[in-house]
Every structure is written in C-alpha cells, then in structure tokens.
Length: 391
Ligand code: SF4
Ligand code: SF4
Image (cartoon, rainbow, N blue to C red):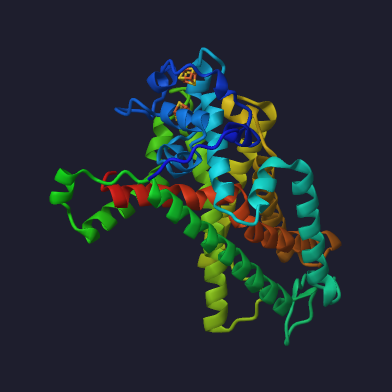
C-alpha cells in the first residue's frame, strides 16, 4: 500500500474531538498503561503517528482504531495532556464519516446546528406524513391504527409504507458505507507472512474463525471488560455492561419488531389488536426495552455529570444517539400503558405519534450517526481477522 501524506490532516481530525496529539513526544506511556495493548508495543502510538504525519489511509484502515474502547487510562497518564484516548475516539468518528460519501455523517459529528436543523426537519416530515391521512382519536377504547376493518388514529398502511421506504434508503446508504469501508480497510490489512501462508488453514476455516472471533467480541465484550475501570465497580454499573445493555436492547427491539411483522404477514392478524404480555415478540420487546432504558439512562447521567474522561467530552452525535434511544424506550413503555387503558387518552395518541416518528428517525439516521459504529467495528475486526488470518 503506497502511503499518501496529507498536510493539515490532523486539523481535520481535530474537528471530531478534543485532543492535542501535536504535543505527543512519543514517550510510550500510553502503550505501557493501555490495558488492551497486550504484546503490541505500538498500540495506540502507531495510530497517533499516522495522524501526525498525515497518513489518512493508514489511519482509517488500521485495526487498532477498532480495538480501542476508550477506557481513558492513556489520557489520564499522558505527560503531555495530548488526550490519546479522545484522539482514538475522534479518529474512529473521522473514519466512519469518511466511509459515507454524502457528508451527512461528518455534519452530524461536527455541527450542533446541522444536527438540530436536520432532526427538526425529519420530525416535521415524518409527522406530516403520519398525520396526512390520520383518523379520529377514539376515546371509548384506545385504537392507534386504522385498517380496512378497524377505525383508528393513523392508517397502518401509512406507517408500513413509510417504514419500508425508510428501511430501503437506510439500507442503500449502509451498503455504500460498508462497501467503502471494506475496500479501504482491506487495502490496509497486513497479510500473513510466507511461512504462515504455507500452512494456510483454508478459506472456510479462516472465515469461520473470524466470524467466531467477532461474535465472541460482540456478545461477551471481552476487550471492553479488559478495559474496565475500578475493579470494585459492580457489574451492573460497569461501563461494558451499560454498553452491552444499549447494544442488545437495540438489537432486541429491532428483532421483536421484525418478528411481529413476520407474524402479521403469515398469520394475517389485525395490527390494531393488542397482544398478551407473554406473546414472544412482545416479551422480547419488553425485555429489550428494559435493557435499552437502563443503559441509556445511566449513560446520559454519566455524560451530564462528566464522571470520567470518556463521559466528559460529548459531541452532538453522542447526545443524539442516547436521547433518541432513551426516548424510544420510554415512549414504548408509556404506549404499553396507554394500550391497556380502558379508554383512549390524548396523551396516549400523542405518545404513539412520537414513538412512531422516533422509530423512523432512528432507522433513517442509522448509517450516518453513532449507530454506525455498531456495524463498522465488527466489520473491521472481521476483515482484519479473515485476511490476515490472526485473531
Ligand atoms: S503518553 Fe502522551 S506523549 Fe506519550 S506517547 Fe502517548 S500520547 Fe504521546
Ligand atoms: S483509551 Fe484505553 S483502550 Fe484506548 S488506547 Fe487508551 S488506554 Fe488503550
């Protein structure tokens, strides 16, 4: 891979976070204290060096970028206050925005004004679409959807069609980003040595071992746990568990929605009819919602209180991500209450409308926002593990 050096590159990365690696004099303290550097004597210094010399392609294609979980130990001990932990997070944000050609991700990371205007615009657009064919609020009993057989507030068809269009648009943007990332990261993978190649395990064995490695990382968060704070922190307040709760809460809610839709298509039940609490998609949705609300409320509180390095510098993308998830979870539970009330209420219908709009917004901005790292991190780790045959 030929190295192209870009003067002024570091200034571009600085827009994505608060660090000063120009002050770094390569002392190696960050590598020594990093709980994740293990035998690697260049982690995280190599990435810092890439940014210092303007080697953009090397920086965004490196595996190390995705191995750091920002525990902040390096920032706490850096003698030059260069904030290497914040630099690693900023470099990841920069990398994500460089995989997205429209520039929306870059603006969501770097501009509060753009984020506010963009989200207000989405809220108005989705609100207008939902209310364009709305029916009456029925107060004899709550009836949120209207269908051929049912009178209700918002036509199921409107939600369904808008949802499908939003999913298709988000999927196109995600595929473009994934394609760009695969191309850039693959170009930077250190291929196995000749001796290793001679004992090549075969493409399927390598593929399987890379998949296992990524699944293990995602489900058990081994590295995140190695990067853990105070040893006495109870597991339910540990940062890795809060991260795990948000990730699996979100995945669980997505799965519950998809299952509900599949059942709707196959069994043909009316979407306006409430289902019992023990209905599998509903049960999964409720458990996932608890995880999501738990994780996001702690993460929000920690960011407001700036409890540590990781939580003391928040970008608009961090707030947007957490508030959207938190509000989606809270309105989901409020909706569960509203559905089972004997009578329909104005607040119940409004919560339903807000919940639907939030759901559309979350899916629409998935490929452009902080959500994207949930796809890019495992993908980068997979590409490196598969191509270099090392996990
Ligand atoms: S500890 Fe600070 S000064 Fe030393 S190598 Fe790391 S970033 Fe540079
Ligand atoms: S933030 Fe933590 S994991 Fe990342 S480089 Fe620094 S010490 Fe290592």
